[in-house]
Length: 236
Ligand code: ADE
Image (tube, rainbow, N blue to C red; front, side, top):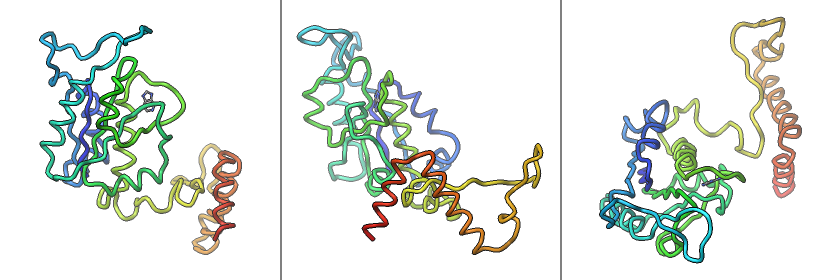
């Protein structure tokens, strides 16, 4: 999986994705992340990339030309000839979900476009964007953090990024249930004991306990997800 991030703040995304599991996946060559600085592509002699909106209004907009040229550079320097999907991170997009991470992890290349200021000239969005994605109903100052969220969530669904034991299967959001609580040593901490079932070594009972905990936790913390779980079971 190759991510190509179009941004005005390349250091921010590269630094944020260089440690831990995603950093290791890059070192291992399973995932690559490249940040392309939109400012490098402006025709403006003062390196300007933004201007006032027609019709007036607050703030500045990113201009079409540097965004388009950065996109064209990304496409022309990709290993594959196929036209990649281009994701624009915006609060106006579909809200990102685990299923989208699973689906996007099947792509060979993805271009992530990060906006700044009040947004980007609509004409270049019409020209290049295939998917509009939001990471939640709140407004951030730019698309970089959302792009990093997508790279992380998508990468961990790419085969070889997680070890078999960690692998994305049995955890929050597969099958709509949240994960059960977990415990490690010591057996007793501040007077709190690890649940007896987990110490019993009885695997069937442990599985049963974990499922019960997952059900209860989902019902309490995410009633919306619990309803999806129930509906999904009714269909099966
Ligand atoms: N840009 C600003 N806010 C955003 C959000 N919530 N999701 C995606 N991109 C954004």
